[in-house]
Length: 582
Ligand SMILES: *[C@@H]1O[C@H](CO)[C@@H](O)[C@H](O)[C@H]1NC(C)=O
Ligand SMILES: *[C@@H]1O[C@H](CO)[C@@H](O)[C@H](O)[C@H]1NC(C)=O
Ligand SMILES: *[C@@H]1O[C@H](CO)[C@@H](O)[C@H](O)[C@H]1NC(C)=O
Ligand SMILES: *[C@@H]1O[C@H](CO)[C@@H](O)[C@H](O)[C@H]1NC(C)=O
Ligand SMILES: *[C@@H]1O[C@H](CO)[C@@H](O)[C@H](O)[C@H]1NC(C)=O
Ligand SMILES: *[C@@H]1O[C@H](CO)[C@@H](O)[C@H](O)[C@H]1NC(C)=O
Ligand SMILES: *[C@@H]1O[C@H](CO)[C@@H](O)[C@H](O)[C@H]1NC(C)=O
Ligand SMILES: *[C@@H]1O[C@H](CO)[C@@H](O)[C@H](O)[C@H]1NC(C)=O
Ligand SMILES: [Ca+2]
Ligand SMILES: [Ca+2]
Image 1 (cartoon, rainbow, N blue to C red):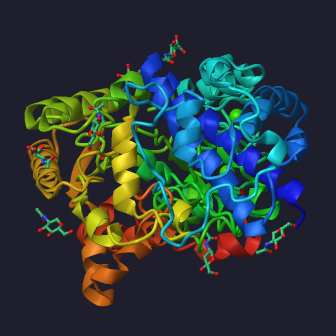
Image 2: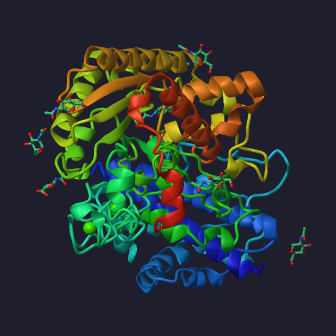
Image 3: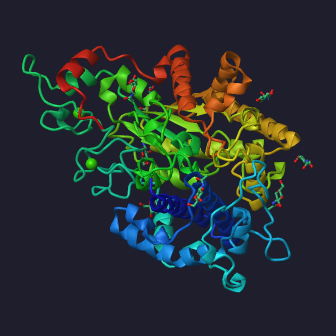
């Protein structure tokens, strides 16, 4: 691969990470917080650029200017070109032999500095590499410290860079809008996959009629057209009855919905994007798609997964509760809804579920609804102290508040399945001795260094578990346990309290499958269940194990939550094939 291509690819990654981080911070409208994310992307971006130089023995070249050619969308491309024109020369001017990415970002004033105003306060990369490799071993001599540029280096916040507005606006939209961007009939279902489209909720089969959408009770028995998008329509000429009536009417159809967090939405940043040796054009093909889905992969999640993703940036096939539910009753085809929101905890759904839960309690079928928050109630981006965590009293209020709202939204006969919080201590058990993807090339950054860096710059997504402090990890787990007990208590006390649904509780399935994995494979294999890049979320294998575990639990303990097996499945499959697919 040519050096130019590598540099271009590195910058594409940097820019997209930049926009993600900038936008995450924007949610808070707090400029200091925004800057902390800029530090994160700067450090990873420049670190990656440096490693590409090592891998391919090449200098940082003027080919920076062509980075944006990789983007096919012209709007992306021109915004990207403006950003690169702005940052490229500044960056090139700054780099010299031995400079570490941390120092470079401090000099760019994108990371916090010590009182001298120049040295970085936080370090991800060691000051010297133990393997003797130099940082930026090959820098074009013309660039080395030509001029003192320190005075001109104070950069404005990322969103104020020329061209960056485009990316920041895009991410504002992703953050604030949890309903489909493209939805002409306003029924909450889309023909497009991304921007909260069919990757999240079953694809609409008529985007001009709001009465037509997945999960609808069929209109006029679907004699002439398919009103619930399950692919079943028409009349059986032998009996003269509509197929919907024959095969589905008595089958107790159920949709699947999840109200949850990033673990429920299946957050995943491909580790290949942070490993210089693995970066290639192919690896980046789906970058715009991934950004437009908020770095979530609901189509492969343990709840609403509906297809196998065969791209190299996701590992393994998809097993999901939706898939089981659909195979149990093919009338449920396409009736899935992933309402996961990155960063959400139990206090959040009341502000958005009314708008997101588009389900008519009259004209739609009931739901099996997952209520899933594995950790954000004990995790936060401040330095975690117990004072920042949700209290048992508060979580009871939060949960009941959401349930009361749901009781006004869900069709009668629905079921709500609540999961407890995880015991996040396994993250440390699984990862503390392993290298983070950005540290694999030089074997110099393990997860403890990664955690410390995130805490130091103030963006650790779970400072209570992703920390070297054993006491804090133990206290965080204890609080999570207490909160889980409260949720379990609510599920028992209010099991039959609500008009439109009953309740069931399950011990955090992530914790259960991790314990089982540890028993069968050993403690040194726990890492196999964790997302490598963030060191935090359950990965594809874990998602699949969770789906199997949850399904077995439901079949055994609460079969009425999943409805009966449809005896007509074989006939439906014979007549309707893949039922229109997805
Ligand atoms: C890297 O490239 C330089 C200049 O082209 C060359 O002198 C050097 O031998 C190369 N190093 C390796 C390890 O290939
Ligand atoms: C994915 O592939 C596996 C293995 O081939 C298969 O068993 C499974 O049904 C597929 N899953 C989906 C959601 O299509
Ligand atoms: C929810 O939807 C209503 C009406 O459609 C709208 O007025 C309101 O702004 C929305 N709220 C949020 C938080 O998006
Ligand atoms: C159905 O929903 C409407 C509006 O949300 C609500 O006013 C009504 O009480 C609900 N009906 C039932 C039976 O829950
Ligand atoms: C709701 O459904 C349950 C059974 O699932 C039934 O017993 C109850 O009467 C229904 N309530 C209403 C208001 O239809
Ligand atoms: C949480 O998990 C750790 C190991 O990962 C274990 O040592 C500890 O006992 C667990 N705590 C609870 C309360 O289950
Ligand atoms: C958080 O803790 C780290 C040490 O783990 C410290 O270096 C950092 O300054 C703290 N950050 C804040 C915002 O208090
Ligand atoms: C570890 O965390 C505990 C609980 O927050 C705190 O009291 C203690 O000072 C921390 N220890 C260190 C070495 O930072
Ligand atoms: Ca529609
Ligand atoms: Ca139909």
